[in-house]
Length: 445
Picture 1 (cartoon, rainbow, N blue to C red):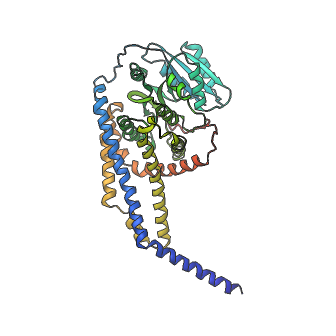
Picture 2 (spheres, rainbow, N blue to C red; picture 1 turned 90 degrees about the horizontal axis):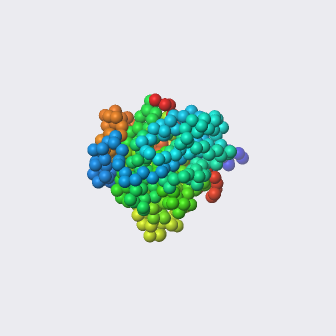
Picture 3 (cartoon, rainbow, N blue to C red; picture 1 turned 90 degrees about the vertical axis):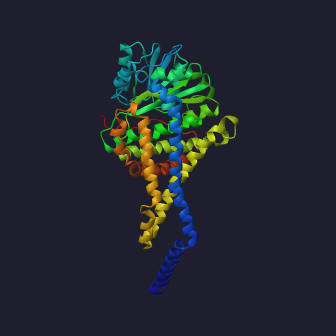
């Protein structure tokens, strides 16, 4: 009796397997697969040229003139007071170095406001000691972990200045950075914020070295291009300057957004405020140097981007939002691209399980399209590292080799984190407070 029921079931499974195998080999599916493969290869190729052309135009329009005055702070018509805000959560190892560097700023009028956001180590004691030693330093203590957005909002309301410079608790700000950023506010009342130029401090591992090249060849190039095309996707969370009246106009930072820097960038631009990029405002930061730490960081960035896409979709049909449409579409298509890559990988694994290994190997073997993409990426890296060379000592020669590994290492990570970040953003409850978490700071080198 049992055998009579079991054998028909096995035969049914075999028949279904054959049907699936035949379906995967049908012409319509192959046509769809070809279209998806073309999208996977040609979309990043197109965007590489879009970013590269925009970056070159930025360099020719603004940056090359500043190279003549490299290392010399700009002469301003006035020097209004500036408040430097440093939100700190468990920054006991970095607070002295960060504030010590801030005290070397080549700017006449500034105060330092350090916010202890419920730290569980000796951060508060160190900050209070520094405040007793230096009259420029003020300390704000939040008894519990409120999140970076709330820490910044609290400090902004307590600041004595109209202009705010915000850095992370582990960052080292260049001594000329404040002056370079302030030149964008003076005489330009429409400018609501200025994003600085973050550089990587730790570079003793493969991931660290690749990130040095990434911030020069990818992040810096994209920032330049976005400034050329009119709108910037995000102010750098580790180094940014703000006009406080602009922040007040948009309600300051949102405490429920996982990436407060992306959120405030969109709020300001949707309200009509401009954002500029200042390449001379250098700030050295610590970055993850483990795969786990990198995965968490990039997942957070991806989640923040998706949250912004969802929250501000309804505001894209206003007059101020017209120039944000290219950014919105590019971010949306990039997210779709990540899902398509994952889909193709899953289908390739299915083909392997169905015994069609040769066809799968043919799909993933080097073709002229993939070779063209790799050569274009290397060309972009060379151009962007050449533009960015003066911000990194011998960057073009020292880190170009490590950037060869970028497509193989970081593209896979970024694809996975984009999908993971999307899922987290969809599952997140509206209004849920974004608080500090322990992050990977890498190895100081």
